[in-house]
Length: 200
Image (tube, rainbow, N blue to C red; front, side, top):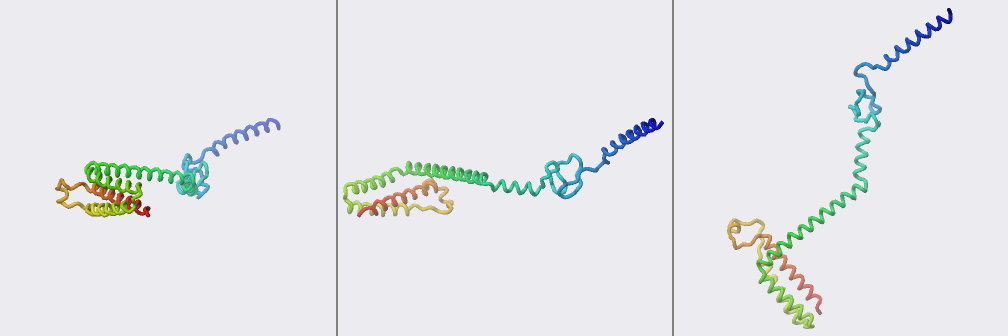
């Protein structure tokens, strides 16, 4: 009898223990995890804490994510990439500006071909005199040409804003062409000044 009561006690204890396990496994509705960072309650299945943004899977806080992202932005590889990109963009803008300037100069040279041909021939004459060793004559002709170029350059007026008369007058060239022409005169003047400065 003792063995039978022990067997019955063992079986009833085992069945009681089996019926308690499902009660422990089932949690009441609305109860979930506790955030390791701020101790707020987090629903089951949520990936981040609604209070502080801590990732419930990794335990990484929102602040540490932000700090890591900022550190990555300042990392030399990212910084060098940005500088490289900036240099490429700047180079592209310089090339484009040069191309546009060249277009204006070519248009201006086509429109005023006779004027610039005259001045370029005069510069070549000074070069020939320098190559022949006639420095005093080259200085004299060069200085006369510089004076003519200065007058021509100063005669080109570039206004801040076009007036109504200028807009309606077809004889007045666009401002961009006049700027290019003025710049070409200045370039010729500087070129001649360097040539004459080298003469003794």
